[in-house]
Image (tube, rainbow, N blue to C red):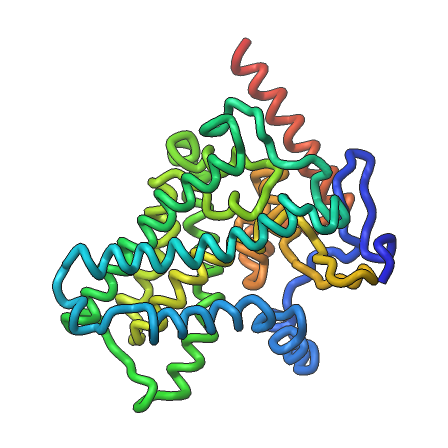
Length: 339
């Protein structure tokens, strides 16, 4: 499909996808079974490619890269550092692959890139004066550190019988359904955690750091203040209540840790091959949040909480005008307050 058929640049040079953001067929009435199955098994869809990949990585990490549960019954630096190094290695490979292709090799130039500008390399707003280095620092030091701390604590609780436990052999259907439902659970938790960080005191103390990234790149996704990381990764606490297996907790944290890379790639379509074939990378929903700050608080809009609470931006020109008018009113109010 030609680039012009997939979208166009607006007067500000921003890439505008041709398709408006739609509510997935799972949350519509009356039910649409064919559309639901297409959403569930399509490419791209709910399972493929990303959630299936995150499940596969989590299974491999649990089976081959995680200490035996009995060993984790005691807090010991060895296995805890091992969990951090495993998570850091996966993040380096995953985030690094996205960044290498799109921002170092610039394999598709600015085709389908939301913002035509590249990431900042001389900007004092960022640590080291460099947006990517700033993002990598916060991701690996604070992000992966707190993720691994929460994982170690959760594994210790499982190992000592403090959490409700479910096993695949006794409850295979529940086990698989819960594993597949983790991204939906994350979406609901992320919406409320994200709204909390937009509370003015928390925004000024922590969330402002993530929003330095108006023009986003893969490493922007997990670049947050430690306070925000502490809030962001609390989604794993759901498995402290719901009967789960340690794999479910690993998957929850792995999804939270890895999904921000494609979600902040900054590109609407990914080109493959010399023919310019593309695969949709539907992250425009969250890009609009970085552009306007006060809309689309959910992760990717799978669960339409933003629609239900009036903060939804569908990417239409009418919604753009509404957000620009709101920003102008806020600037006017700020000027009045300062006078």
